Picture 1: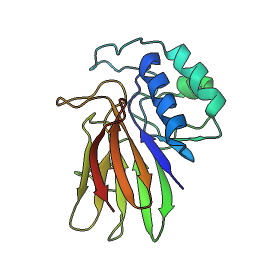
Picture 2: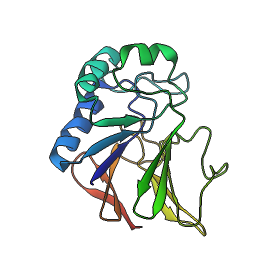
Picture 3: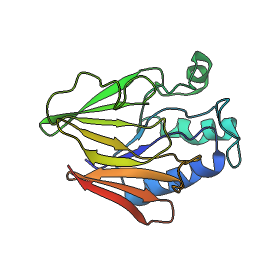
Length: 180
């Protein structure tokens, strides 16, 4: 199955629309949101077209396509308005013979690894910095940020298909690829 990963929408209706357009164009089977969906957080400037209610209206009809994990900006009030679960700290996805551990990154990350077996995959957002690296015992992936990228990166998302992890910009360009 083709999976699309996105993180850190932070309530941007503009970039949520772009993300959903990319999801449709990619024809992915599942959209995995890695947290920080509605709120921009006190450390970030307001993203373009900050409109959490519009983001809710766009995402709720897609509830059967979405698998989401809790970011550091999610709260119980967010779960009250979203029609899909957003309060889990992680999702464990069986990907071939390996586990794909999807989380936001504020708890589990490269400096505080979750329980991984040799060859497993850790994917998270939170840093707003895209990454795709093979480490000694695991693979570390980060699709970057949909709305507030950092370190000069463009707004981005990622696709995982047939063992190829591809980070893309919303203009369709490939930013980085890693064969898992």
